[in-house]
Image (tube, rainbow, N blue to C red):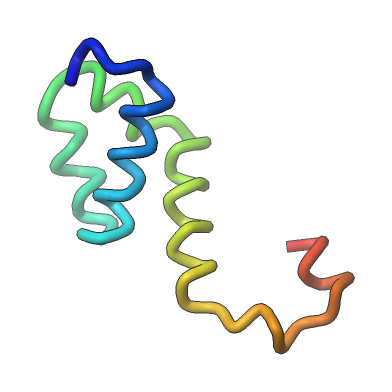
Length: 70
């Protein structure tokens, strides 16, 4: 796993966080320095959060303007 490109590894870690929940970020940060550096980035946490948010939100109920804004 350490030879994977950062973008591929990040995709895998975001998927793990999406499936396992926010606690996975803490556990992944303890695995190794590379994982910690990826999962503690604000961009990673935002991506994981919005992936979760998209999975629990019914976007058809919102206007086009609202969707573009958020």
